[in-house]
Amino acid sequence: MSSHISNERPAPDQVLVDIADYALNYSVESELAWSTARACLIDTLGCGLEALDYPACTKLMGPIVPGTVVPNGARVPGTPYVLDPVQAAFNIGAMIRWLDFNDTWLAAEWGHPSDNLGGILAVADWISRTNVAEGRKPLTMRDVLCAMIQAHEIQGCIALENSFNKVGLDHVVLVKVASTAVVSRLLGLTREQTINAISLAWVDGQSLRTYRHAPNTGSRKSWAAGDATSRAVRLALMAKAGEMGYLTALTAKTWGFYDVNFKGQPFKFQRAYGTYVMENVLFKISYPAEFHSQTAVEAAMTLHGELKQRGLTADAIKSITIRTHEACIRIIDKKGPLVNPADRDHCIQYMVAIPLIFGRLTAADYEDGIAADPRIDALREKIACVEEPQFTRDYHDSEKRSIANTLRVVLANGDVLEQTVEYPIGHRRRREEGLPLLAAKFKMNLARRFAAGQQERILEASLDAKRLDAMAVNEYVDLYLP
Image (tube, rainbow, N blue to C red; front, top):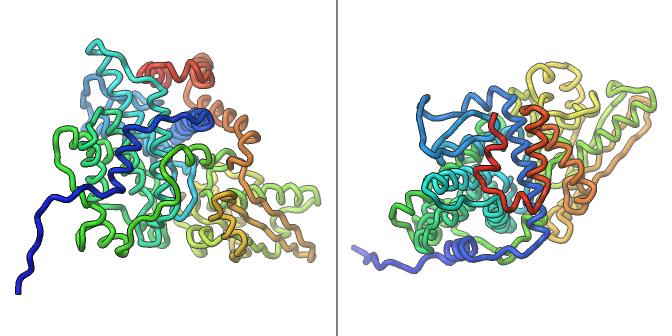
């Protein structure tokens, strides 16, 4: 018996078309999106600068082949590297994500939309330096900001109703898709080429979440987004060179993404692409902690102060119950040994124990030296998580998008301390409170790498909206060179 297989070339999947048309044609009018993107830019670059203090990150950076010379290559902020745009995207993307301190989006799928800046900035810088060398105009930072808004929107809108983690795939697939789309526009691809590039991103092999979960939690989660955004640049360049696309990459029976990777289910969409995600993105301002734990860490800091007022330490704690939302339990409720920093920054018990003991939570607190303190594991054993159904409902409510946690601390003397935080400091509902702290975080990160005069030049350019928007990309990036 044989069956006829049609080889007629179909029309492209509508999801591919919608992404391409948005990336190529959408005009950003929202002033809130523009202002939030400027804040996102400095926060994201600041996170990358802090990561340069960690050899585990910097050992992966630089050219693939030492000594490689790239004419008009993209620069990597805070480093001497001059790289091709694919490797520059990996470098910038890895340093941005290394410490889990850049922005976050939480929905059916979660992720970090500013991861896309790796590809965006690398390509925009490379194009600008090439243009200047050939007597043409460079791109401006407003072009970068627009690409950031669009990448946030593509990644975030797909994430609203579609859970990749529930089928075992890592959220960086959305970084690859979003970066591919917006980088295609920066590179001047046609509509057909852009659709081809996006299709290549979906056909590509997708990362498993293995490296984010026990017993395999490891440092790949810190460079996975850099890998994704750099792969996006590679695919866009291939499409520009004329590489064909696969027009039913999602819907092809048996062989498409839906059947192979998504249990045969098509994507669902809550809203059309606009500027919603950038306007509502969550900033990690105070603590380098997985975002589902941010409010728990804030609550722990408050309770540390209450213990101190009573003349007590964390040793006086008998038990702790964390009432939380379902996603928190699924991702970071973790018992047993924690073998590396990547393991620790995805354990809510660890992230609550540190502030209760020390009254702080910094990136350094995930390193082996601090983790060896026996008080941490002793306190972790006293902490239990339970789901609060209302917190889960509010987490998914598009009007609230809360990330609530309640800490109930029972002391050895029987006293009970309780603290609830519904919205973290970086939430849109606390944006006015958070932005001055975000600027302070940026200033602190600049001081890690640069002398006072250079810090001031970066701040003057970055905090003046009109000046930043008009500035050539290569000139802005040059401000960050050592």
